[in-house]
Length: 369
Ligand code: NAD
Ligand code: GLY
Image (tube, rainbow, N blue to C red; front, side):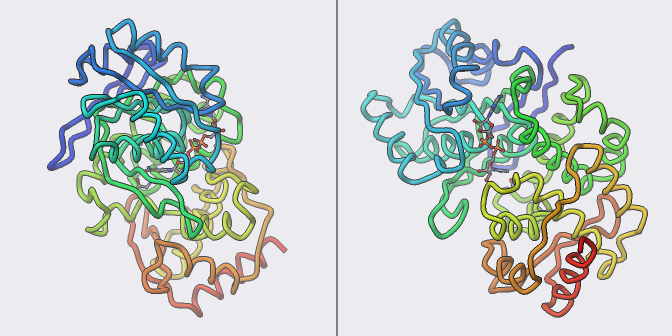
């Protein structure tokens, strides 16, 4: 199957290609050169402890063959590496290696490596070229595109970061063969989110291909990634820095999702599982507030089930959930905001008053009891 290419064009930014295909990692060096990151520049590949033994060799080989001088740094796998301490180690390593402003940083891994390496690259010497080589479905459909980078603080996730578009994104789908099932479902939840916000064409295509995507069929996977990238590129083009009320739509399912992750304890459920539950809740809240059709609630439930994101067997008291939502960085002045769907693709972001939210959360709890 030939690779797919999506060009991302964001006002005020250099356009860049996202290449999606089973052999894309082998083309990494040539693709970087085509993207204007010309050899013999020095390249630092940042990866994690799980991805390194699987794919660092292929990435290095491709870059070296294209004439780049390659170094690499491996960070521990997991969210813990998205920290100022690890970012500091990377900045120091880059300085020790003598990397200058003309170097490039390649993030080889999931969203953790992508956000971390993107942040480090966008700040080292006031910013060097960054490219993304995502190896999780979530990173391919969401985090590698759009330029959000960052690390976490004790006080919360992603509290320090930059907006910095990559020069190139290479989504090599054959790397997904080794992705654990939980991570696959995590990516599928984000695909479902994008489809529900994007519109009928994507949503009904996904409904028709959900079983194939859950089974990691190559054609369905490439098409799902490409559709997500086109969708996200459009959103980011309209609202690069999440300041015009458009990029916020990407938070569909995330208001309750973040509260579940925080209250259940990070890692208890995957981010995707929590977001999927958040989408189920948001659809039901939408029925009360903006007329989300019953058929959409049912179709979304069916889609999430088929994608391996079943309803969560977990609940918490409504006041505790409300408090967690108020603490979330997406809340504004303690006001809890939800992305709701008037229909597929017809979204609205709205603050929800406390009594209404408490009642809906209590109903959500009762539905499981
Ligand atoms: P992750 O990077 O932690 O990867 C999940 C796990 O899969 C890790 O253990 C990793 O080592 C392993 N892994 C990665 N690729 C693999 C492969 N091909 N085979 C086997 N194992 C592999 O998690 P993620 O879900 O990719 O990303 C989550 C992060 O992304 C969060 O920090 C989140 O905040 C961030 N994020 C950022 C954006 C953005 O716009 N920048 C958007 C969404 C999420
Ligand atoms: N995943 C959220 C964003 O990129 O804005």
